[in-house]
Each structure stands twice: as C-alpha cells, then as structure tokens.
Length: 120
Length: 183
Image (cartoon, rainbow over all chains, first blue to last red):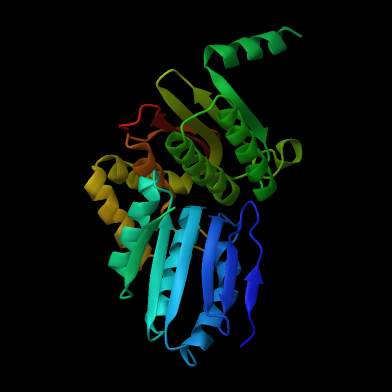
C-alpha cells in the first residue's frame, strides 16, 4: 500500500499511515477549514487497509488540539478502525490537559476498539 | 480625530486585548489565534486556561467564517463581523458579533436555550448524541460548536439578536472563561 505522510501545519495535524513500517499516527493540531475534505484520503486509506491489515495495528493519537468539525471526523477514523482486526488505540494527552483526556474517554465509549491512555 | 482616542479609551476600559473587525477567513482566523496566543504567552498565562481560550476562539471564529452573512457587501466585504477578547482579573471574555438571516433566529435561540439549560453531565450527553447521530452540514459544521464552547467555559453562553433589516439580524455571543484553576 502507498504510504501517507503529511507534515503538520498550524491548522492541520501530522499524519503517518505506513503499513510496512507499522506506523499509524495522527498528532498536533486539527482545525482545517474543511475537515471533511482533509480527512477523506485518510478514511479511504483505512478502508483499503482494513482488507489487508497487519496482524496488529497500534494507532497513535497525540493531539494537542482539535476543533469540533475535526472531532466528528476523528470519530469516523475510529469507526473505520473498528473494521480493522487487531486494531488498538493509544490516546496521548498532556498531563495537565483534562479536556483532551476526557475527549479520549468519550471517543472510547463511542466505538468498539480498545483504548490505552498515556500522558506526555 | 477624537474617535481614535475614544476608541482607544473604550478598549482600555473594557480590558480588550484584541479586537478584529472585518472580513473573516481561515487565514484571518489563524492570524487572530496566533496573536492571542502570543499575547497570553507574553504574560505567562497558565497552559490549561490558554487551551480553553484557544478552543473557544476557534469555534467562535470558524462559526463566523461558515455562517456570518454579509450586509452592504460592497462596502464591508462578504462576512463583515467583529471579534474581541477581553482579559479581566478573574476571567477572559470572548465576544463575537455577526449578521445572520432572520429565519435562523428562532432555531439558534432554541439551540442556545437548550444548551444553557444543561449542566456539565447534560452537555456531555448532548455532545455525544450529536457527534454520534449528527452529520456534517453542507458548510462543514458538526453542530457541536456552541455545545463545546459551553463545556469549555463551564458557564452559560450570553447571546442577543438585534434586528438589522427585514432579512438580517445581528447576533452577539459572549463566552466567559474563568482564570482560576477550578473553573
């Protein structure tokens, strides 16, 4: 599969989707003008990946900030991961960022994928 | 030229650290955010408070980008609106004002009344319900902005609609963020 490697900007997150290296990461800030358009290639990639997934997929979310439009799309990403056998999420949050911790907990209650929480 | 001094004094009196009036775009949003961040960094604002202010600012600014209507477009641009941040001893006050179509007033009032009637847990439930069952509007909004602002603020949202003409009303919104840590 082709790999996706997007550098983070001030309003879009860094994204790494690399099947052969086993790296799956969304990190940084997400407040794009058009969240649906920005996340569509990610959703397409994950749909394809689900049919040929590695035996385990550890997906890292290390977000500093995301807006509400992005939160809807992050839920879509997580929903795609429900279809990936052996997928699990590591949700990182800054140790004093209760809102990001709570956001992760809420997502974990909305989808059927194992979550692990880690502070940084 | 006295209006310059008057405006300056008004800003000082209202403790306004940033006012932007004009057309709103994603580029402007990023600039306004960067200015407010630098301002808060400069006096060493606590990171948790900074994050909440940033959060409410983004929702506020992107609401304007997506939903503000233009009036006298030739003179003022497509979505002329105003955005302000006031820094007081105990709180930040984030205010915005923009034109909206009159036929949206009752729907927005209902939404805001519903949000203001809920406590912390009620807002959390509403958020989860909307994120799960809602879909993105054609303008790309998730219908979560006001809910998120109320959650981050922990206080009621203040709002007002002032008639402009037969088609438009001026929508003002004020969100407060406490500067003490238990907020």
